Image (cartoon, rainbow over all chains, first blue to last red):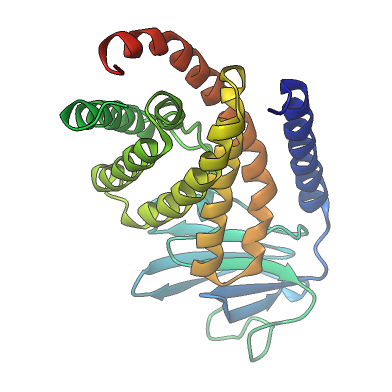
Length: 129
Length: 171
């Protein structure tokens, strides 16, 4: 039998490790300025947030549903979605953090990275503006 | 452990209790991070593991997850719970043997942590994006704290129910 004191130490260490990882992960700055949007792990769109001069919006949709994404100078957010939990909308703006915005029901992930992951020009095109 | 109808009734009773707690907990609004919740139904799983046995606890957990998925209507959530529940149960098996009656809460804490790891694994498989791992530490913190709370509740339940069970069920 393991002593209760030992269990407290083990679980306390686990909690401390998790807390520290939270602190490190969520205060870590983004490695770049390009917002990459992934669906099913595949990059579908990239926007260089440092090149955005005026706000614009676009909708990403497929058979699972739609996410309305708004881009402003230096930041990006999901402003509307028809997923059941709308956690991606509640996540708010993503600007210089390495932590992602996730929409699990639509398998959508937005991350800020160094390079554009999706093919094509990372600058907003005139059609969707 | 008594066999047959008595044991089945006991398992059904625990499943009903777990399901009731689960449905009530659905009414508590989410704080915005998927997977972060109290997991009150875990009290029943841990209590059953110590009072009836790990196999019965596994059956109760499985029934609660499947019926809970049907009741809540969130089929996708069912897969997360199934993965989490399986890992939680797998860690319960060895813990059941080494934990004393005063350490029941430990099973709940480690079970909750295992449950969250299972959920993350499903989310990883579903989104195929490593960025999901950002949620792991957050879920670990919330899992450990929630598991501590439900674990202490389960420990009280086991210590109070043991005499009653001995008298009426376990002969």
